[in-house]
Length: 149
Image (cartoon, rainbow, N blue to C red):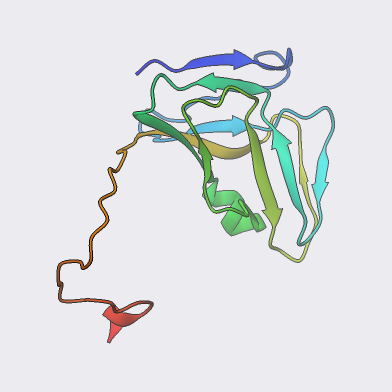
């Protein structure tokens, strides 16, 4: 699949790396922070960090998903407040990454630092059908924790 990318900032590809796959087996491409200066995220704070890019997802059959970098989440407590960011196929604006600091220490994001990863995935558009009842299953209506009994 070909993904068109637009550099919204003239820093991309010069001072700030363009998004890239770190290894040949990477499912997500790393997204660097497109910042003029370091940005400190204090404990409990949420910020929107610019990436300096916009993309053109070729059809509604695909979606861009923004995931946290596991090393930032595990080692530093920097994660996404919405768990996963969704980039719809018709969005053409700059991509921002929402980050939050769940640690008890401030964290400094430096310009060009890898802050998240972008995965492009297929989408299945559901056709809703309203019914009076659903088929029975072994689990039934068992909710949270019901399979751990």
